[in-house]
Length: 254
Image (tube, rainbow, N blue to C red; front, side, top):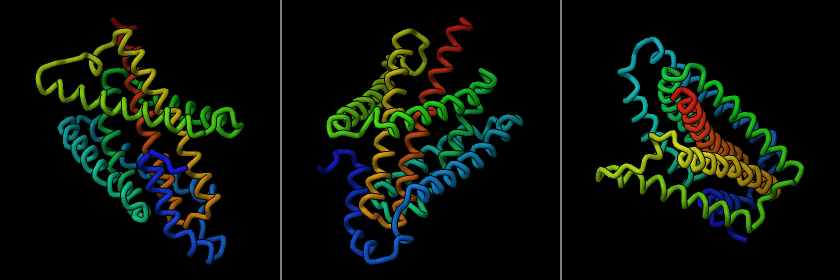
């Protein structure tokens, strides 16, 4: 069955287009779980390095770098992500660039949160690792699987969240503030929890994509594309958990 998830669909198309040549080659020419895990660790290392550089600069008083870092990292990362999504074969080059740009963005954002609530970004990192490990365990022991129904549910949820984000920004341009991004209220926290939950469950689709690639004998370059998809989800999850923890901390301080 063809997935409605754009990234999953691109992955499948790229895999089918090159699977014959991959089969004709040796096993070392095809995608493996260990190879994908290695690529994911490399991307996380690149992201952490660039994030640490920006964090140190901002923490040292260079607050003037925050906005440029957010613009370069945010816009640049978005453009590179689009290239990687629609041209999966470029992932060996675009994925590390994306990781570096997102590290710049996360370094600036995390430094701002840390200035308000000391230690909060570190808590969000640990929570992200814990949630990701928990979801992996559920997937590994087949408690949660990427069935057709699960995929449809996740895609619907992600489309709804995207429309919510875009709608909130558009309304903001017209002076209508729905309060989600600035509120510490109960409703905002509940919505934040739901979105974080969707981000966490999206990891199931990432794990399934990796297994599917290995089963299909996908070319080695698809390891980078799968690692890229995993990184996108982890960044989303981290940002949602960071926002959630800041809301909870803000309520405690009120």
